[in-house]
Length: 372
Image (cartoon, rainbow, N blue to C red; front, side, top):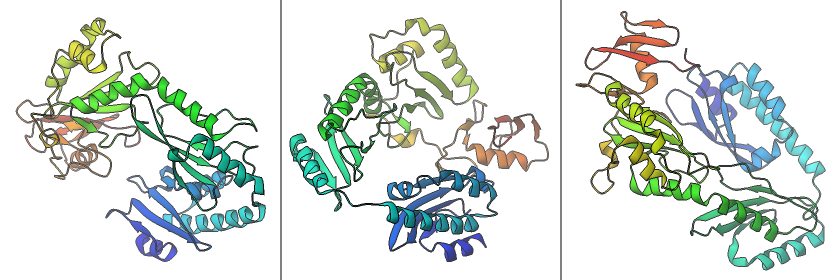
């Protein structure tokens, strides 16, 4: 029923799964298409939905965020919310058209001069209005980065919006006399301050089997690294202090993971900021990481024993049977539904107790705050 209502309201917004939890596509208004993606939680409650907007849509809805949040809280279903979103967007576009004034003639001459001074070879994209500009920039290690700039009609008196994938907050310093070169220099200085951070993660990506993220961006601080079949370590590196011990979390059966935790705790004094991240992890955990030359990623990516898939939307199997003869992994959501359907299962606060679907040995599931 919801899919039919959504099709009438937004024919270009297409469901991406069978459960109606993910929609991706376009809203069409005033001969313009705005990209939008909506992720609903498992209970389909709108107040916990995540809405991802394209830059033009996000820009058009500036100043209306509180209204959208309010409508998310009170709309009875997604189709109703989308109808209200279209109404709000239509009003926003009308107000934008009324308030928008064309740039002064010197806007274009000033911008073209700024680009010439910076170098046309650094320009990747400019739209027909000369309001959106993408610049490429390379750090001292040869890593390429993308600077996205959105200029308004008052440039250079007002700073452009600047976006770049970084693991730390970034804001440009701007005066009416500033130019694109000033932005470029500020970004370059920030990139150089993050050199050690990216060097450490690049070494991890090159020499170990990273299970997550599959395609890490330059803003990602986390890596989940395979240690063996159904055993992995997740590290979360501090971008400002990349030589220090990162946050570490182990995933796997207790009989495999607990010795690793003990080694981490007992060998923490061996961590040497003068050594690289990978070497320190080897020294502290007293292990050698599986080599990319000897194994394939599929050797570590075992499917869920309930749904027989590796990736369930964005989740991967993160629950493992502790029995050494089993060790079967499961998605948390799949194991929760399985245990909930067993008469013998019981729950105490945020922990469920039951039997492994594979070996029938006792298995426990610690529930997330939302699910419990």
